[in-house]
Length: 344
Image 1 (tube, helix red, strand yellow):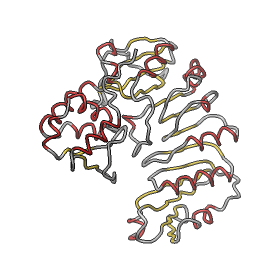
Image 2: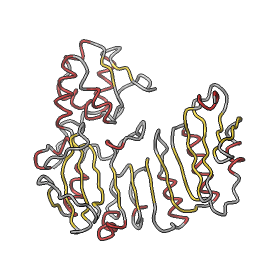
Image 3: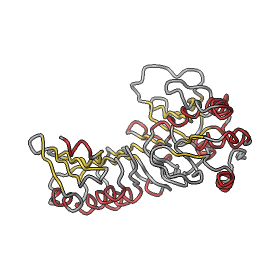
Image 4: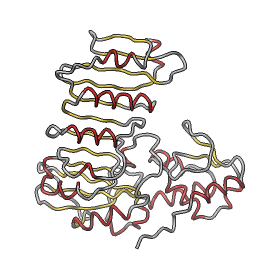
């Protein structure tokens, strides 16, 4: 049975804020409001905040969206910094390796603020595991897995993944963060289990695939997608574009050709989002005029590197512009800060 001790209702956050003015100030463009389900970072600027229950502080810490914010929370003054530091030591990522050589699954836990260390899953309180990462261990891997990596079954994997809190964000993340996302990386070396994994409808945020059968029935959205397998059917590409949500530093990479209509839909989705996102796809034999497509949304243009790099932007009020990289077989759209375009 799941332990939801730290699942404090959003209404509690809203009520607490209403009773304590000037408590919450948000970083990086967040407007002041009640705490969303997973927040990026907060400054706690009222002495009365030290009087809140410990469970409330732990809940705030668990709701932080990315690892940088989690690390900053440990530097908060008074009880907040102390409790966040203690909570951060408990927070882990569930890591699972698909061993291509032995055709087995191994699991361990990775401390939230330590990228290169793993510990035994049995030593971790599962309610403090906030995300998972499933990766393929190559047949060419030379180092042995150390003792804390434990063999698990496919049923164990499914149970562990669905135990994780929160299973699904109620809001899209502010930006891409590898260390806090739910990640699935399935290559040709994991063909022995790919189909079963993809049929589980795992709540992934980032996916790298060379095999897709069964994936399109999965729930939720994608913020980082990379595919390098056989050519997909148009309906499959349509489903991927529908699932993709542009966020800052997100990416959509499809290593084969897609239709003009699909390129246009993906392009316009990213323009409307106003996020620093990158999209690339093959373009061989395309009839679509990318210059006209960009000109519909941007009034100014600069050309560089023998016409292979194009920059599009609008007036001084616009924060983002578009850089287009043209290659013989593929094209890349990259939305970046527009300031440098105006000065170069």
